[in-house]
Image (cartoon, rainbow, N blue to C red):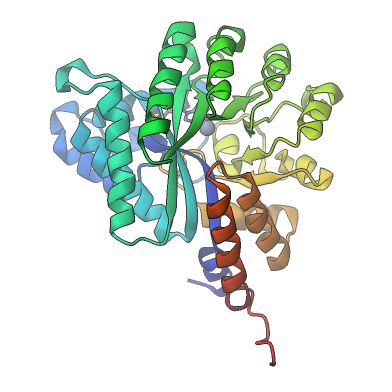
Length: 353
Ligand SMILES: CC(C)=CCNc1ncnc2c1ncn2[C@@H]1O[C@H](COP(=O)(O)O)[C@@H](O)[C@H]1O
Ligand SMILES: [Zn+2]
């Protein structure tokens, strides 16, 4: 590993936007494929390699394939523990994992046991002594409409109360070209009222101005992507003003957006716009398995594309702590961890006493 890559690996990081089934690595995928040879799934069907791009539709097809491979409690436990260990090995000190509870009649998987198993994986990793704190967001798939969204919020509320603080919020995701946020608003309002935090995929594709405007009134606690919010991308100053006024952090995923072709190139990524505004922007992976990346690589990409030095990168990773959904005490612990690691990672001269 060269010096620069080592810096990004050693940089303590916060990952706030990671879909569980999109984060499955090559190694774990091999294990899943071996478990289910009758499905005839090849690795090329579950990941988008270097230099490759796909349409958004093709990307969502990938998730269907992965869901076939991950359909038992045993699979979920393996996938979740592997994903957490991999993030920890990549220098991630705090992780928020999100996933859509699924029912699979054939394997007797229920939405309840789905979430229970994800929580079990988080607890198991904690007991292994990994240097990472993990929290969970229950995801609403936008295509499933009002009723399922409401049930999902109920489930999330139950787990928020019974998981010892591990379930902290709701994610709204799924194919952005399907469904409309207005049907989900009552469920999202209910979630907010019962103390769940909200991270919403907003304006991931063009022509969602009306929906974004509506959902920004909640307001959400964080925004996923927000690619088409600003005027230069067909959004509007009005939307930007709402985001800025409410100080809503953005979760930005460079490789995901370029490989999914919602952004034409790294240098045209909206990170530039929000970073120049000084608005809280957190670098994230989205789907590290599908897009063949990791968080260190995403930080390195942002730095090389937007000409950020090590100190600016450090600040970026440190500021992400303020955007986490976990309790204040953990925020303080993380800030302290960053302070302790800073001299060594930034290679600062040792202070003379
Ligand atoms: C297609 C593409 C460019 C992907 C990145 N952008 C995304 N936008 C919206 N929802 C997503 C995205 N990536 C993953 N998801 C959601 O996460 C799910 C996979 O993780 P899980 O089963 O919830 O554990 C997908 O089925 C989808 O509902
Ligand atoms: Zn996402």
